[in-house]
Length: 344
Ligand code: NAP
Image 1 (cartoon, rainbow, N blue to C red):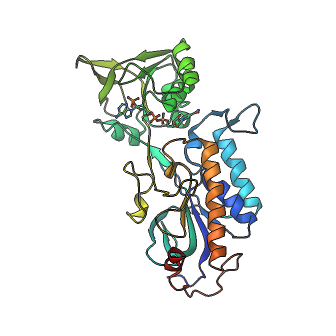
Image 2 (cartoon, rainbow, N blue to C red; image 1 turned 135 degrees about the vertical axis):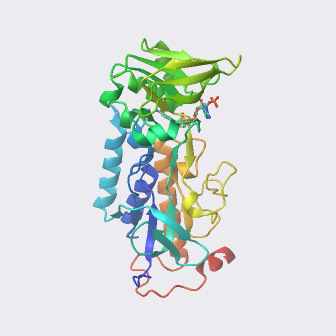
Image 3 (tube, helix red, strand yellow; image 1 turned 120 degrees about the vertical axis):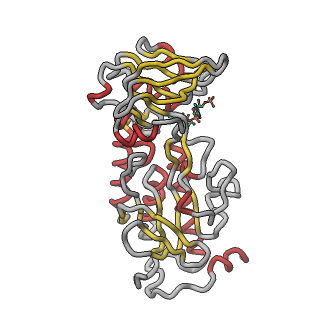
């Protein structure tokens, strides 16, 4: 166990909510440290926006901005005010005592007086045979067109995108830059996506919707050769040759590392019981962004909740007389702060 004094505020995550929380907290002299995570096949630091091309609805960017560029700017702004950044995941937490204990993937356990969980949500898979195996092999199956779509393997091929939401629309539109044709495979005959995105897709000459259809198998040994599909109305099965498969069927909030220590909704999002608040079921722990929001799920709303979480954390610390850092110069834990807050 490290003998460092507790961190005043640890922010877990690296999307718009995390960086906005860091900007506010750093400017309030809370000396935040952000655990931005490490890259993996399904997730790269920066969150879902790293998989987005044009962001046209983030206020202040008249001509739009790419997702990665927006994240780079938010991160740099947070660092400018003194935010420290660790390129590690937090693997597990102990929230039953105060200061809270956080275990990074590789380095020593740390303690924190307040925590903001801003870990976002990750892409879902269909769960059909060969899907994840081929995805891991780099064999033409992906949950991120923006990451993988420009690869030579997908050029001038017929590609399939699964899903009927805005993510599927984005992926399909993006892939038209490289593909010969994009088949949009949806299990119903009506899209869930916003009108503007759906219109763009349905009018695009390279995109062909395939309605009432679900993928039941991915064909190919080392690389995809096609997909087996089933008509959801007639039950009829057929094989469709494709050179790539992109899954865009929604996301699951990243809460596994919490190991049940925060109350979650029935869909697995962190509960923030009070309206217009980011406080969770554990006093001193706040949640922001897609990990607590299954309704808006926009970059700007994530940033908004990040701001709220930082302000709430600051007020919580002030209420406990911990205020501006340096907060505790010893490793001694304050006694039962969470109970004191609950009682107030
Ligand atoms: P979503 O809106 O939940 O859509 C998921 C889609 O996948 C639905 O069409 C759903 O079908 C389908 N689906 C789910 N499970 C499936 C399965 N097992 N097999 C086949 N199909 C399945 O998720 P999303 O598209 O990721 O969007 C999430 C949020 O982010 C939305 O609020 C969206 O507006 C927002 N977003 C915005 C933008 C943008 O503004 N540029 C871009 C991306 C996302 P059903 O329709 O039948 O349920």
